[in-house]
Length: 333
Image: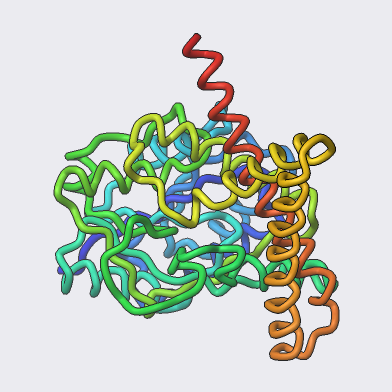
């Protein structure tokens, strides 16, 4: 008998993309009668539920459940979906993602071959629009300068990692470590994988598991996304301080150094000199990388868009991380 699989999807106002995701799941090579979809909807107001219902009617062989998530928080949505799910393996997807046709099959194969608690793969990051800025954001989000050493964004060899996106979890491991932390509005998957590792589970990344992920299309939404990431990463570190990685520490260190040196520069020449050296090296690295990317992809728009995207990522993430840490300090007092 085939393993029963539940695909869980947190969702809110995703009418534009939910149909594409459901079609991608419908086209999976894994047998439909061994799969179910559980969508935790945050009481969408844009017709998302109508789109789900229409798809379900036209594809009756695919079982689709919708559960309410009035809190509109991702970890709450995941927990409500898991409560409804009946699968032996739980695969988490997002409403703006597109898994490859063999996604479920590969997840099951690699879970079996590795014995891991959770497996995931690599994002094929695509622009969410046609313009030069949307293309630049997608390139920056998949480059080490923007993504650090996050292998699910930059690809790499198969192996054990700290976390994976859109993971395939063995239910017995989920029952062992409990539900997602509903106090974390973001970084809930990283925190969950930290608990799995503490319990002796392995988190495994394999680049054969692939999905399309659509990056943000403008700098404002990108800044909001990375502000959320940075703020809640700091909150998560209160629980797991040892989980901080160099790629996550560099942006707040850079932002803090820029602020402190900027404040001291008018009054202290060494601070002024250090500030110019820091910003000069930073600018030179970004210019060199964006020039290489523009030439490689033959896209002149990257010369402006790539630096803007990277600056937004670094300062939004780093600034929010520092603000969260500062908030912790005052709360402790």
